[in-house]
Image (tube, rainbow, N blue to C red; front, side, top):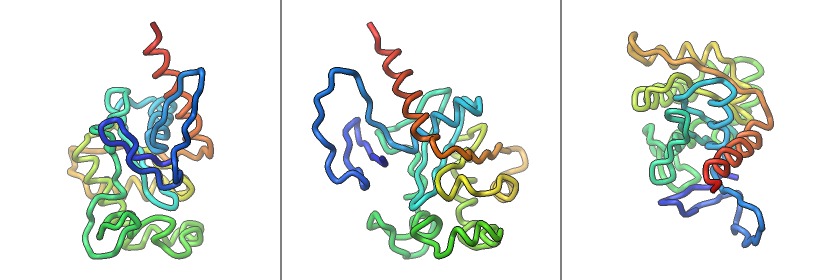
Length: 201
């Protein structure tokens, strides 16, 4: 479930209208799905500094820095809601966000565009890759991991070529596409285990 946090408190959960009140006798965590994906990708791909981007209906992002999830005040990594120009309305109410141009709800026939390879020549794909390159210059990760219903279907080669084209020659980044439908769930399990084990008495 995509959950946004500010200062440790959940402030937005678009896919969960009301966070249920639960009384459990076991420890548990609540986290953003993109953070869980980022943690899984960093662990399984063996990178300590990683930018993870999920592309499905929308675009989510998570950051792993020195092997740990970087949260900022709670919403770090939300690349889908960065401003890329224009006035196109985003689902969040803002204008000109990346998610308003690239992704499942923003593009028609996206599955067909991927299957035919036409997506790699679209202006929207170029915009997406420029956004990834901008994030690389800010975060300096070793790798970018792509996942999600759309992101997990993309081809690594055109992604890497286009992203690195927007970077200075001295900066390069590995691009990996994670084709695991259960990556978020596995990442949540890993994150829960590691978080709980670190807080044991």
